[in-house]
Image (cartoon, rainbow, N blue to C red; front, side):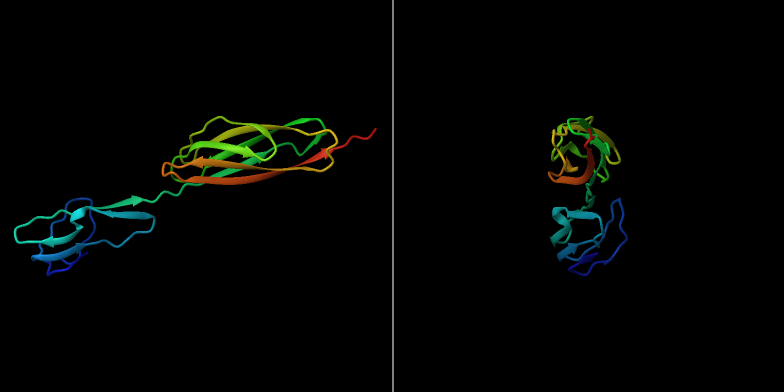
Length: 173
């Protein structure tokens, strides 16, 4: 839409190509209805003052607002004995619509976390691994949580968590 002075066409359909409008001299503003999921930016000549014979050019850009997301699923054994070393596998998936960088996992008790890939495009996944040695004398279940993290190109971080419970077996004599 165009407002501010007597224009020949007050409203016109959006287009990716050049659209020409005639304006009387004076103040004007060019705008557009916002669209969900997009951020608008306007060039400098989208508002101002125009004089007779002058030409102004306004460009409105609609950029997709990124929706970064990450998910993690943690897999490990259901049971193990005291003193056993157990291995956990984590599947980290980019469930958003923008690339993720520096993808990693951090388990609250397992160690040696490594991932096959640290960059994920939308829909991609990677496997990560870590291990944990069940201490001698451990009587309680091993309950632990993994946090997956990824960085977006827009300097924001996304995270997800998943937990796992392992029943520690105590063999009788």
